[in-house]
Each structure stands twice: as structure tokens, then as C-alpha cells.
Image 1 (cartoon, rainbow over the protein chains, first blue to last red):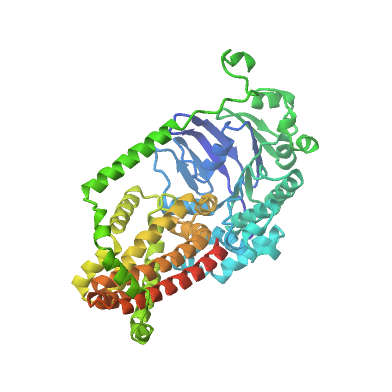
Image 2 (image 1 turned 60 degrees about the horizontal axis):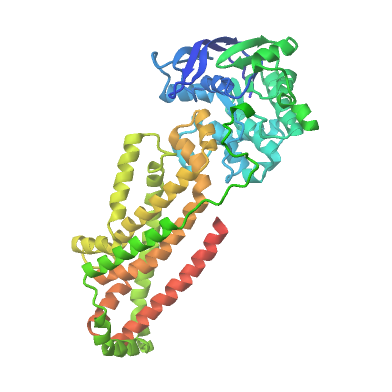
Length: 269
Length: 270
């Protein structure tokens, strides 16, 4: 699975939703290959939009985003579509808040979804996966230490285990970038740390660029080398976790820090 | 927050009074009853006819209560034909329905014009009753099991596509989103993320369709489309009610047994 990360370059990236709401207001941002970036902010601040533009799940209205060798553009430009868009997406793994597994099928079948781009249509339709793809999926499950569950139905796993299966699915793509959209929001505090450690380890060992949205500031500070604070579709902070002091939190959240904003305080309540 | 509340707004901790209802329900019942009476007058329902013809009813019912069991061996081929038609039609109908169901669901088909076209076609197929398909197909391909099977297939596709596409509409789209985000085509994402999720409900619909086919294949036989129906038509037109009675009994037993089997199986699925 040895493969290096990719740069992500936002150039005046703008998203205006059909209802007129501005998701991103002209973001310019440079994420070098192999960096682990945490994105924090209130809900509705545009964190999720920021992450979802990187693989084109949310289309840009204007500006551009370069990911590896591909460039996503707004409606004015030549929008990436069809096979080119799928090729970009095959290089970008994604982890979701609600795990997004097909719960009625096995763990290994879920991880193999990460190989869909590389699998010919007839193999996909028959479910006749190449041995190489199955091997990649098994190795991905080994990396998140859950390979023993390969043939269990996904529904029989706990939340934390399901999220690790989702990480394995992203790894099976052999991606250059992994996006994580609130990956621990549905998990309890100890499990949150397990999942965040997995993401950090993948970033460190494989050099994959990781962009992760987090609601909790302390988690973001602990696990990411770079912290980006968003408010109302704009970047209001960009620096290391250590630089993010009380004044910075106020600029991101528009108020002082409360127990709601950190994971550990909530765990004590 | 408190100063924003209007002074007349009730305090949220206060119990609300029970909302009034009842009069609209009563009005609806009166209107429905009026419509029913009007419809009855429209088709000229003559309740007195029951009184005038009761002797016929007694004679026929008496004959029907005495099945001619000696007739049983002669019904076996038709009985088997009915079963075979139901099995074949269920199989072919289900195979055709799976891809059509994915094309007919908003969740799995992003192409709006194609979605509309498939749904329109499915509504057309479903709007024609099975016996009408049978009557037309008997005229086209001739009397026998083939026309019956074709009629049942059309009937089944209508049902399965409707029910399975509704199951797809109601399904969680998370896994499909993940597959698309990994670079899958819509076909690939639907096959690997959506199909496993609806398999139990698909299997349940297929069994249910099989149950319906057992019953339907006896009825469509009345217009010549094979199976027990043809036999029913024969004995009935010669007023052989003892034999008719046996056939009805056979259908009753067959339907009850297969429905019990299918329900037991379906309970394990969902």
C-alpha cells in the first residue's frame, strides 16, 4: 500500500447552495502532501462543505481545487465529470460520521467497495472480485486490526468497529488523500481516541494527506499538526494547535470556550 | 430568549387542552354512505333477485358441498400445470424486475428523464389487470400455458418493480454515497451498496408474488391461458358442480399450504 500523499490546493473556492446559502466564500488554502489537518468550527460554519468539495461530492460554484493531478472547477469552467471525476475520487478515501456501511453485507464486501473504481463492470455485477483486490481489502482490515471480523455482517459490529471498517474501505482504495467528515461524532470518548489514533497512524506511516472535520477542539489539537478554524464559510484561523489560544477560539466560535466544545469535559459530566 | 416570547404564548410546561375532532369524521362517513347508495342505484342493484332465485342457490350449493373425489386423478395434470406456470412466471418476472426496480427508484437512478420513462412504463404495465393480459395473449400466442406464463410475468413485473423500488427509495443512502465517493459508477455503487440492503425485502416480494401467482394462474385459465382454469371452465359450462367443487377444494388446499410455507419463509427473511 506504499504510496505517497497528494497536495490539495484551493484557489478562491466558492460554494453557493441552491437556496442561496454561502457554504464557502472564496477559500484559498494550500495543504501539502502528507499533512494531517484538523478543521474545526460551529455546525454550519462550512467545515463539511470544505471537506466534501475535495472529492466533488459538493460541486464548486466558482474557483478551483487541485488534488494530485486533477483540478475541480466551478460551473463556469470545465467541470470534472464521468470517468475523470471517478479517477480523482478513487485517489481520495472518505470516512463519514455515520460510517456509511452496507450493514446487511459482510465486512469484507464493504471494504471491497474501495476497489470499485478498479473493478470491471462484469466483475462488480457478479461480485467476482479479483484476488488482488481481496488481498488489498484484507491488508486494509489488518491495518485497522479488525481482520478477524472479515466475514461477519457489518451490522453485528460496534460503532467503533464499524468506523474502523470504513477506514479500511478508504485504505483499500490505496488513496493519496483521506477525508474524514466528523468521524467520531457518533462514538463515545474512548472509541473516539482509537479512531483518531488510527487516522493519525495512517497519516504518519503511509504519508497519506488527511483532512478531518472535528467538532471537539481538544481532539483536533491532539491529533492534527495543523488546525484550520472556520466561521461562516471563511477561514478565520490557520496554524498549529499550540497557537490556538482562548482568543483564537473566540474568533472561531464567536464566544468563549464551553464544556460542549471539548470531548473530555463532556466525558466527565 | 424569554423576552422574545409573546405574552399570549402558553407556557411550555402547561398541559394543552385536547384538540377537537369528530365532526369531520362523521361528515366523511355520511358522504361515503351517500356515494355508495348512489353507486348502487347507478348499477341497478336488485336485492330482490336474491329472494327470487334462492332455490337455484340451494341446489348449486348442495352440489358444491359434495365434491366428487373420483375426479381427482383427472385434475392432476392441470394442477401441475398451474404450479409450473406460477414457478416459471415468478422466476422470469423476478429476474426482469431487479434491474427495472433500480431504474424506477429515485434513490438509484440519477437520470431524471429515464426515471420518468421507466416509471410511466411501469404504471402502464400495472394498470392492466392480469386476466386482460391473459385474454389478449391467448388471442396472440394461442390457448395454453405459454400465454398464461407471459401474462403472469407482466403482472409480476408490475408488482415486484413497484414494491422493490419503494424499498430502495426508503433505504439509507450512506453506503451508496461512500461507494460513489470512492470512484464507483452508479451501477457499481447500486450493485454493491444497495442490492445487499434490499435482498431480504426482494426475496419476500418474490415469495409473495409466487403466492399471488398460484391464485392468479387458476383465474387466467378461465380465458384459456392454461392450468386449472381451463378445467374449471370446462366442468362449469357442463354444470358438473361436484367436479367443480373438487377443483375449488384443491385450489383452497394448495393456496393455504403454499401461503403458510411462504409466510414462514418470509418471517425469517425480514
